[in-house]
Length: 440
Image (tube, rainbow, N blue to C red; front, side, top):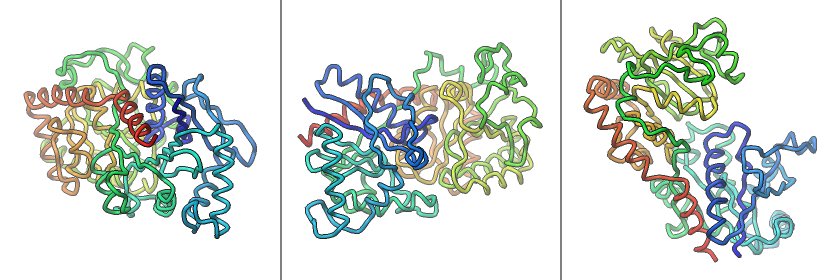
């Protein structure tokens, strides 16, 4: 029986990005294993702090019956090791290669001699027996280093070294596959595309429910136990500690009034970082306010990434900063409520490997305006309005077009739900399994 080991290290207590992909993939693969005749286990590496303190790290984001092997080598150290000079496992002359060979022997034995080892975050350990699979989601660190943080800039050396012993690369879009071929010189037939899917399963609702604030049900979107549609001081206390209804890092949450979710709002969901092009989103919001006099708020949901300071400075400069709300990381069940009731979803990202928030918004029938860049047209298909991410006026024009045209909004909502149904985590898992079996 095929034995597969998947690296679950990215699945943190509050997963996002890669962590969400790995979490949903593992759940779908585990279900598939019941009927497809393969054995699924996971490995994980501790954080440097947990390793230094020899502390346990619970894996409660994953199914409790999914076997997980702790490899007592923190990511920080393995990243350094995989980036050391030295060639493939066959070259035993250098000390680094001999060390990698010893680690490969130890891992093979520790993991019970698997057939497949799947590295899910730009790295995969070497193995003498198993075939190795490496996830590369996008090449921000190569194509747009100005949008990569210090950690991401170290990925290139690590990836290039891991490719020396990688049998198959898995990526999430044809756009990323083209980049991997062009910039990393990986043969196209070594790359397998497994698209992602929305994690949400919304209620069956008529698309018009998403198009007008008059259709919002009288319920509290962030605290289902409360009947009011307004965030009261009680419901604010129930939010995660990181959540801040603020307009800049200097604004204290308690000084802000409760946010009335009956108001119409435009939505953005993702990490607050330069690559997401939030400064141009804010500039376009200013244009919508000054030129088109819209009543909408702008709601930004996402944890602060790197170099977020200029984004909050842009908010602080806005004449309409009192109508721009930043909420930090929110649990899935809370985020989906915002998706369900947004008037439009705007995602002007400069570069994506996939662009999962676009698909998530479409799942709920939210009209989507997104960038005509990288993988985003591939994900949105004919169901989105596309804009030049460098042009705030163009963004504002297309957003206003959607807000002003109820027929267009309803058409985008229906097409978006149809587009989202083309993707599923079961399909992602099946395609991943096909990739594994292509090696054996």
